[in-house]
Image 1 (cartoon, one colour):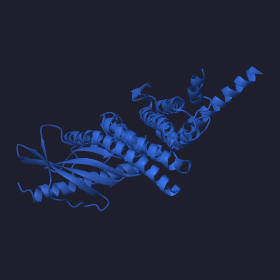
Image 2 (image 1 turned 90 degrees about the horizontal axis):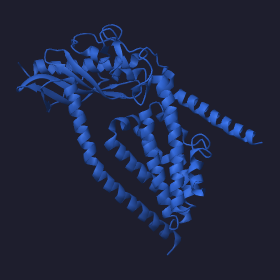
Image 3 (image 1 turned 45 degrees about the horizontal axis):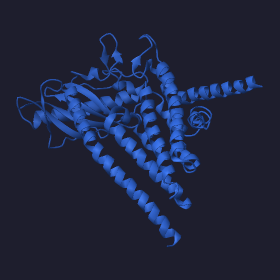
Length: 197
Length: 201
């Protein structure tokens, strides 16, 4: 047997064994990872709409009014079969990488809650957007995301005007505000026009 | 005694981070919070110890010409397993340092130990070398992370240590402080080794 063939066979055997082991480990971990993703999603949804609501995946699509902001999955929030709000999975360009968040919008055109799912903002600056102990209003203990609760979607959503910006993180503050506003406007328009009364 | 020396070798005399000074990219990146450093230590130790044991146990069948590709296959397999396990059981921390866990595959400490030690020594010695090097790596990155998180965030492993009025020094959890704290630690170790030698004379 010539040398090259032998080397190929040895490397092939090692790779095949490695592949087999990986397939086995994947079989074990895949269901755990999947269960976790579903649990995280449910926790996220009930965080932006706390209370006894039913969440349904929205079949149609919404068009984002802001070209920089894109929408992922959309959920209808129902109580006793009636549509009371919507939750939009929004991706907005952050400082270093896109920020993905869930935005809950009430039927009456106010924001119900915002939760950041994924972000890579600077620790200590932009990452404070997602810090539950970092208050932009220390007296009232309002977090950066907390300030959006109950905010009307007709507001301008501009940091340092009607949104309290994070210290040293204007880009993050603007990105989040833009994303929340875009989701709010799109969902509200849908709920007033398409869904009827 | 000789066996203990193999372990001790990785902890101080040939400490992979402080003395050999290799694989520093992930050291700087994951030491901003203690929980990141802990997960990284787990992933690193898992990959290093198992890779060394496997490489050493199949070293007689590995043709010399393709030993490096085989090391890479072995290391990549264990890295993927470590990443899958971290994703399944420590999802929050995994999300924060995902990239660096996957990059363990090209960590020069691991391929270096496979080539320099496991390929030439028996299974048990390779296991001890893996354990020693893992402890050496882990204590350094956890020590750096404790200092950085304490001054940069006022906490250790998420527990608040500093009083609420403490104003965190942001630079400590940003990458530059990784180099600063690492530099101080390297300097301190060099100094204490030199002093020991001087005392002997």
